[in-house]
Length: 470
Image (cartoon, rainbow, N blue to C red; front, side, top):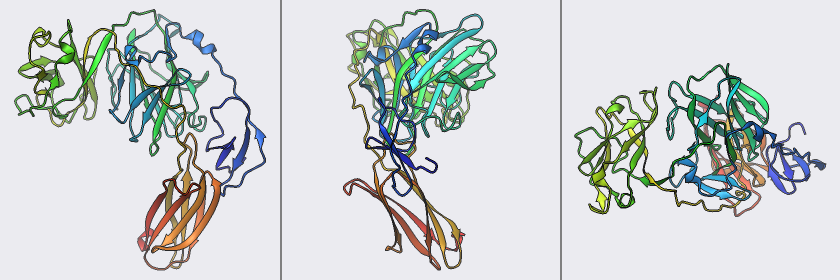
């Protein structure tokens, strides 16, 4: 329906004409005022699994909840929470907003000699409206590479700028990076959507899958499958123990450290151990001189990639082998302090640190609910025209990144705390509205969004109308 603000699918409100659901439900278009069209029967897109034959190496359907045995997972703790969804799916809940999760597969991408040399496939909803999917193919074993990947890395980014308008919120799509003799082709559901004129010189690389949900919503991303071409590989069994440094700032070599350490428990029965850490660089310093201090011991750290950038805000993963005197049953219960040091540290920051010791990880993902709670559209308001005696106020209600939308009752406009206009939108999804206000001089204007459920959390936008609004 031209001009539709959204759709009602068997009682569920969505903003996109594409929705993940089985069967052929009745669908009604919803305009900006909440009016419904006559119902039509939805068209069901059949599932295509033929792509699996092109992935001749390792294919993960996330049926196994022991995620850490197959990946290293990077994300802000408490703000990026992995779980196991029904039907064999990795669910990443991101309640804080504006976070990114990165999975580094322990299985490496291996390239062939010629023709189609390699392929990485990811089935996910991460690249939906205002979301982002990033595939980094990097020789070495970095846990994350940040905004500036190493010089020999291949980066594929899929967001609204690539094949815009073809992905609905919460709908799984298959994205593939296909490496050939001449380029890297980016494929969505079997159709090429972009290409990169890059031919890597390496034969083996780590695969990092980075996902970012839409901003302004309780984030949720699902990953249904990851496939990587190459020969069958044995993956080292390691158990990770997350560490928090005494300060997240990298210190100078002789700078005083806070007396905060880490427990030595994971090292007591370990025949060997290593520290892995990722640092965000500042505007100077020498990462080749990075060391980790555990009590009186200083462990040299080495980058796990080559060609890394020293530019400010670049991210570098380093590794260091712990000396034998830090292992075994004897010794203190804690290693204090635990800090990172670097000559000319210059505001470099520790993003994450953890021990790796031999043995399969016992960490198991918890089951999570299949669907998230419906949310209100994001409301914006602005004056688009201000005349001496009146003004035009535009209110936009955007629900495109939402998996399901909480229905609206409407919105109200207040001028200097007095009700000036009411716009009913019974059962609405969103849309664009213009309100003409007869006003002179300076005024405070508030727009209040009203959900259909009076107990639901609402939203409001404040504006100032003055001559400077012209």
